Amino acid sequence: MNLNSIAVFSGSNFGFNPAYAQGARALGREIARRGLRLVYGGSDKGLMGVMADTVLAEGGEVVGIITDRLVGLGHLHSGLTRHELTLDMRSRKHRISDCADAFIALPGGLGTFEELFEVATLTQLGEHSKAVACLNINDFFSPVRSLLNHAVTEGFMKVEHSEMLIFNADPCALLDALELWQAPTVTKWIEPGK
Image 1 (spheres, rainbow, N blue to C red):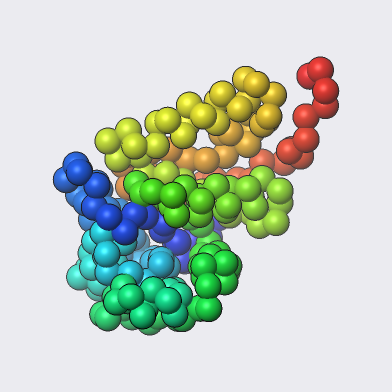
Image 2 (cartoon, helix red, strand yellow):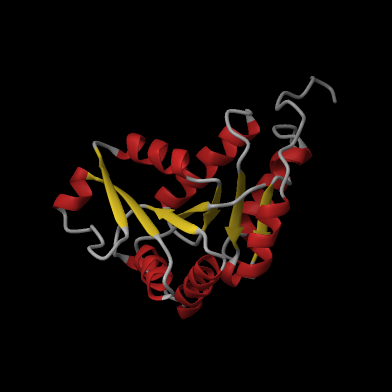
């Protein structure tokens, strides 16, 4: 996979454990070191702001895509390389997806989970063939890994689709895995009784 742009989904809060911000900084440094463009939600809040600030401080390029409403609430990061405004969250997500070659989720809340599962679903359905990863800081995403395994056990997901998401706590290893990733070649549907 040829990676030029990485979309990162993350919380607009910091979380209670300082390891989350430390992990976001480590990923930001590695993104900048590799000369990758960061594409994200355009905010200066929480882990989103930590990530953007780190990439910028390391001389990297950061593109923020944010809704008009969030700008009105004072969430726009003013120091970005470039930002784009969208009308709503749906168009924001669509634009982030268009600008990215792969996706990484950092710890976050409902918005982060929704973005993560949407891009993974689009990969599963073959609507794009972009890798999806979770930076598993402090085992934050381990319950997601367990949930995917449970979906396989219960017959709602093929193992190839549960394994297409990359989980790693090391930013360097995570980005290496994204570069080597290949899309699954199976359909999502499971025959009854199999």
